[in-house]
Image (tube, rainbow, N blue to C red; front, side, top):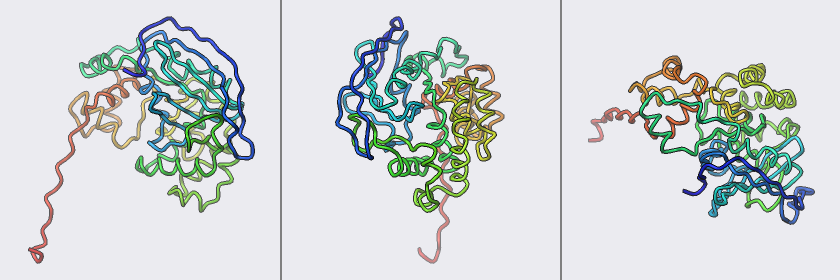
Length: 333
């Protein structure tokens, strides 16, 4: 299967090259980027590992191409960068462009789940054991960046995924920077904090973002440096720092550290669908609430997020409720 690798000892090598930098909002001529080869120490499925970083099919910061490559853009502490990740036999090849190229390649192993330990998970339910067996390449990514996961998570608060993905797509394309290097057309780097802070109110409305979510983003970007520091904390402390910002609650902080920290135990509470899915998969209870979900996941303490990921990957979801019988208008018969 494309993107899946057999176990090999961990090894990385780096090769340098020219790094083009966009000027004046125009992409510079594409040249060879810096390259790093990473050999994972176990099975690795690129789609499963990097998939949570994609915010919808039109995400300007994430793209998959027919050759199996995964392209990402990030705003790193060194500046914007583009990363291309490709499977090459039992190894993974990362190539990066832009001021943030070295930063991205330094953290390529963590991005691919090298800091994650799937062996720490012990399945206690047949469904989880079966799913883990079918999906051995699942690793939890760790981006090392807070704001790039926090802002789209704020946009996803209490709206449909389609609405949130549309808002992210429109705002990044309009206010972000061109992706460095030979990135696929339409890719962009998310705006820097100051740019987010200067977006006019009518642009938020045009993107379908209500005042509450827009205000939360604005409060977050004003303390972006302090929030980025949370990546050096343990996940619990990081979530506590994020939740100091009004408008950022447990749902948003969990969704963020799952990606920024590769947090195996930080399960999402406050979600509309997840409790019912977990309840149905583990106990046949489609009406489970957060309290019941956490009770069911208690045997997986330390690995509750991984357990939830495996449940979602199992495809076992509650059947849709039958629609109510229509109310007939006798006058129309």
